Length: 105
Length: 173
Image 1 (cartoon, one colour):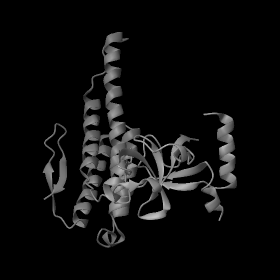
Image 2: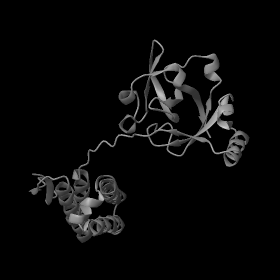
Image 3: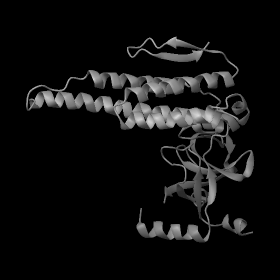
Image 4: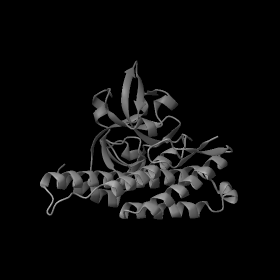
């Protein structure tokens, strides 16, 4: 229930597991992501985003938008050698993108 | 970033843990090779050779130019020795931790011990100018490499390194 309500908040905190976004974001880093950003703007190329895993929607991933094509988003990890991303699960639709990562803290 | 914001967020994290965002690679790539570890060990031997062969600067006291040249060369050899001993540890740790499975241990009962020896010898190779430690390190890494190829179900063989340092490399036959 709390999680449901949480989805209405403009910002969310995430702790990063894994190394697929290194060197920009490291394992164990904490980030703030803005949901509100995408209430107003469309996700664009270069944004680092928190996105629902298309294979398991309760799971969140963090990736960078590499390409936007007709409402489909190609996501890649910055550390391509250690990343499971659109190369594996394909492009994702807009509604899986949760928020734009603003900063680490 | 603002310290107040950061502290507030950290405090919030204590009250309510942040959610996890995964930045994983969930496909183990399955590509392992003990080659780099062996190159690392051979390089440590080579650096010991070069350090042994390095002539101390003559004169009492030696000229600044001679001393600088000597110190510079020595510093470079030591740095490379440090880095490559660490490379050995890193490569062996990954193969040992990620590749080897419990069933491999049944056949290679000595594996943990070999890895333990590699860790100790690599540290000794870093700490000292010690050719014997570097030679022993290579010998243990060769054993480790043979166990690796055997666990992969492949035959292996030892070939001359073909490098100035001499020594042998274990490769897939």
